[in-house]
Amino acid sequence: MNEFFKQDQVKTVLAIETSCDDTSVAVVDSHASVFSLCSATRDLDHEVHGGIVPEIASRNHTQYLLPLIEETLKKSGRDWSAIDGIAVTNRPGLIGALVVGISTAKSLSLALNKPLIGVNHLEGHLLAPFLETFPESKQLRFPYLALAVSGGHTTLYQVSDFGKYQILGTTRDDAAGEAFDKFAKLIGLGFPGGVRVDQNAKSGNPAAYSFPRSMLGEDSLEMSFSGLKSAAHRLISGMKPEEVEQNLNHLCASFQQAVVDVLMAKLKVAQKKLNSKQIVVTGGVSANSGLRGQATNWAQEMKIDLFIPPLKYCTDNAAMIGLAGAWHLMRGQVASMDLGPSPQSFEADFIQ
Ligand code: KG4
Ligand code: ZN
Image 1 (cartoon, protein in one colour):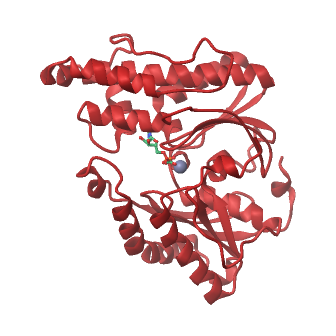
Image 2: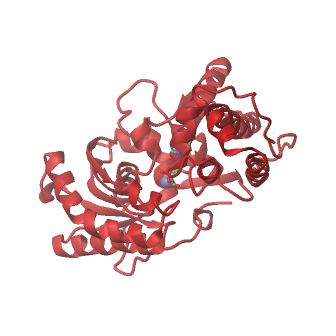
């Protein structure tokens, strides 16, 4: 059991996440209880443009955030006097989108005289599997091996403790979620792509089309998805639109299998290198049914404990930011009023 679950003292935070297109607010405590989580996103606003438009994301956060804070606090059954701090994602992310969350968090912090806590979005994803697991017997403990795989990141970490994250390997180009999204756009599935590819793949044959698996033969933990993207582009350009339409399920299943094969191969290499007995798969792409299924089967065979957060904690959400924030608050790690947004890739923060 990790140190925060053992402590009698508990801190409760209100957390705000606005790093990309989802506006999300949660009330969470340091024992990983989620009292409320409310999110809003308008996919349609972005879909007409074929992808996330930063200006639209910021505008929507401005509109949704305050009503969402009120609703989340109400649903938590608590009032402001029960909140010990205000946690907010301040990096990495779209600058305009982060600014909305940070400015609101600062205003709340000043008006209510409560500490402000800046949270790295990726730290949130890495800690998400702890949410609401307490007091289950099979509980995640430090250290563990984690694959964080989302729209912006595809990285393997050795998580030795809270605040100690070592990067083992990462993608050299596209993130896996980005590859899913671009492929979805290419075959006319629109935005958001990953989940639609996943749905279509369920009735398709993963061996129907052959897609490359880059850097598989190597012992290194570096990954690459740009070759897969180019191969998909070449394949689709050579197909008639009706042929694409008729084979959507097979195309999706084959593409998804190629992404999952690469992720699983790298996870296996990392597990072997570190001899890890606990593995976490987290981030938006961990919602993928193919990846969840293959990782689960492998973990069973290997007698490894695998932790994949429930779907609501896989994609962007404020609950994971709240947990990281509450633990920082327990350690007295609070931010000053000059807390700013940063597009900086999270690697800058973490041990290399
Ligand atoms: O963690 P997340 O919500 O945001 C980032 O931090 O990037 O991840 C979003 C990514 C998107 O690329 C989306 O297409 C992908 O996760 N995604 C999926 C699925 N659900 C979300 N990819 C494949 N299968 C899914 N079921
Ligand atoms: Zn994310």
